[in-house]
Length: 62
Image (tube, rainbow, N blue to C red):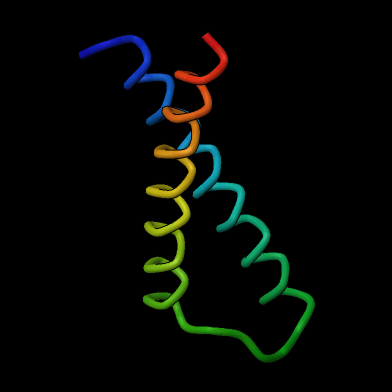
């Protein structure tokens, strides 16, 4: 696998995990919140967008 692909996947994981941490903090401090499956779906979408964005920005910067 290419180095740029691995970098993009790593940034995607960082984005998804950051979203999940913020969602858990919101659920901790607020009584209302989404269930686990909707949050997981949004985290997968955040992963995909972040990974694609990292790959696109890396191509533009180099």
